[in-house]
Every structure is written in structure tokens, then in C-alpha cells.
Image 1 (cartoon, rainbow, N blue to C red):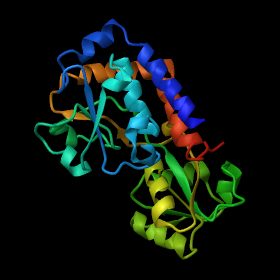
Image 2 (image 1 turned 90 degrees about the vertical axis):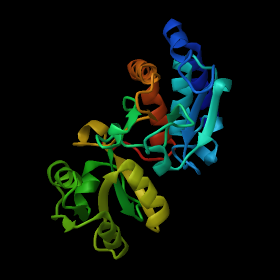
Image 3 (image 1 turned 90 degrees about the horizontal axis):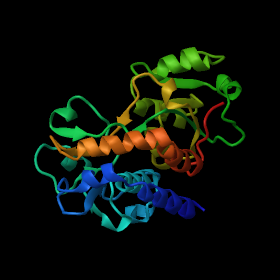
Image 4 (image 1 turned 180 degrees about the horizontal axis):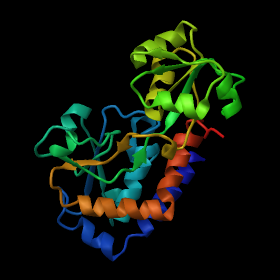
Length: 269
């Protein structure tokens, strides 16, 4: 079902290309008539499914094809390449037009590369261990024993929004929070959703991301942008395409498909 929906979204995006899209891709890419997009090597779920961005499955793969369609590129005109994360954020010439691999937009990086407007804003998510029987609602969250890092935005969210029945335990960093979960000292912790997905799948045995808040409930969240060379003439076109995708709801639909439904991480009610 996911494949059918992804193809449907891609097709609808490609069909939209108009006069503005036509002007976007002419003479602004490293290969005439083609859009070269880079991702990680390997690229991970839920950002890219099965390390195969060509399928258009996974959040960033789907966004990439939707962007390309808005900019006037057919699906077959998208070329994929791979880079490491650190390689991509170095200054200088690039062998790609866009690079999408969860680059947080920061002022320091923006001095040497260009970023598109954000295509994703990371919400806070609840990581638990052995979450069977728990539900993603505030009544459940209040009963859990929480651990938080003192210097992160998780602390005010736990204290003010969740307001648990027992005071949270405070730690210095994420590593200590995870170790506390392993030791059974705490039941739950808040991380941004990408970090929570990684910890739950790779680091914390029995880890489960119970639910996520909406992004607008997080102070100073990470914003992901497509990375380009500094001064890239394509940036205006990419930003215009993203603005259109936000306005028509297609970007939100892709996010819901791949970062809520596919991951099974529901919004906390």
C-alpha cells in the first residue's frame, strides 16, 4: 500500500509543473535537464526505504521526487548519488544539485553552504523500553518515571506540558539517559524524533518510540533543509517548490505517511 501511495504522490507532483517549474531547471543544474540528488551511503529508514532512493519510498526519497516534480523534472530525470554527511557540508564545488540526509540548518553551516527552506521540523518524541500496554496519551505519560538532560528543551516540556506525577531525574547527556533506561531507573525520555527512532532501533534493546508531539510544541526544534553549494542559483526554485508543497498539503501528507504511519509513531493526544 505504501508503494502505491508513494507512486501516486510522485505522479501528482510531477503533473503540477508549470511555467515557473520550466524556468527553474533550465541551466541551473550540474547536468542539463537532470536533477542530481545526493543521499547518505547507506541511507536509512524511515528517510529512505531499503537504501533505495530510486523507489521514492521513505520520507526524504518521497520529498525529493515531489520537489523534482514541482521544479519541472520528470521522475526519470532525477539522478541519485551518494556522499558522506561530513563530505557534503564542506565548502567548495559539489557533484550534486541537492543533498538530503537530515541536515540540520545551522548558522555555522550556512556560512559555507546553502540550505533550502526547511522541509521537515523535528518534533519531540517519547522513547520508552518495553512499551507494550502503554498508550500515547497524556494520562499515561504523567504516570511514567522520566529522565531528561538538564540543558535540552526536553526539560521544560516534561515539567510544564507533561507534568509527571513524580519529579524527573536529571542527567548530563543523552548517553546517561539511555543508560538509566537500561538500568530501569526511568521509564521514559524525550528526544527529537530522528534521535528517538535511532536509539529505539539500534541502541536501546526493547526500545520503542511511544508517540510524538507536533513540531510546533517544541521550542528551538531542528529544521532539516536540502544542502546546496554556496550561492546556488537553484535555491530560489527549491524554496518556491517547498512553499507550494506546504501550501497544498502534499509535504504534510508525505510526512504523515512516512514519519507517523510507516514508523507507527502516533501523535500524542
